[in-house]
Length: 493
Ligand code: GLN
View (tube, rainbow, N blue to C red):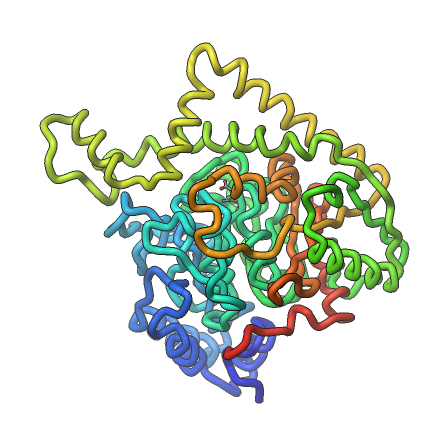
């Protein structure tokens, strides 16, 4: 039998169902690996909680009432609120915060909403991330950077860096992530795993600490597309009473079409994704992956997404604008940290926020407040919203000619820790290929397609039209049947 920690979600689910291992045995194996907190991936672990969830899973398996992924462990990005583990969103301002409830996504993957119909997964704890999900390298966490299991002198990507590192280092078979401008796709790419951000509105945002609400989406990060399909099926579904942007579409079985053939599939290749700025090693790996897909029956169609470059300024106006509003709730009164010495209410607010927020979060709050302020709103925020619509329209024009779009996730492989420390703009620029799909609300995915400079993983991005999430997973799965990049693992694992 494959060692438990080397099994995929699908393999673990089968092993548990057929009682070749118990949920307690599986949880114990992963807890042992996470001990000592390799890569600084975890922010909260509590073996008592995990083992008691595993015991409950074993009881359900014995009683014949098991959920679809009963007993399989998962780690949650620390922006999902959880009752049994601390929740910090990677910020000092939420140190010591404990939520009175679980986020909907956490409930659905666990024992279900109102303890009904959940997948039955066991929570391994909370994983590190950039503070309030702001970042591309997981270096903005108040609890320290996460290291990349492929090369610990490099970043794991961000903001879901803890999720990606935990899966790549086999500390967890799967993790939740959130993606506002690339935070599932880019760390998945940097750590050589598979991740999907579904169509905006597919997964409930209830209990997901808000960064930029019109962009934030939850999604799974795992080793294979098959696993992502299983996890996404459990995570999605309308949540109309609790999330006003939840899509009113029925839950879907994203595994149903994994076996479909790629014959005749038209893959759009945006010329803007392959221009100057794309590193040669990344390009080589993507080109080879496109050849493989062609060999499987797909046709490559040249397309254009002419406003790709504008996605960076547009996103870095809209996301901070929404963040400056969302983060106003952290005032020292209701949650987490409160400054010790203050003279009156205003001084308490000021000191709490000055002490509690990190540099990048402050930068974004200031940018956001500025672009929303009287006199600048029309010049920046409103213009950005108009261009956002044009970017979405460009995709619709492209989808008249192709079924899905492929390109790189990021211009380079993972960079060295500290590389961009004095230049936040360098991190922003690296988001160029993930931001357009985010702004349009389209599903996007990262699939490992090989290795570049320093033997660091390269991810290919697949972007689909609205609600075509299953098609992305199908293409990724077919590609993974023909290749073994997703099976490679970092040395010493
Ligand atoms: N790097 C982007 C940012 O810092 C995206 C982050 C995300 O998707 N959460 O805003």
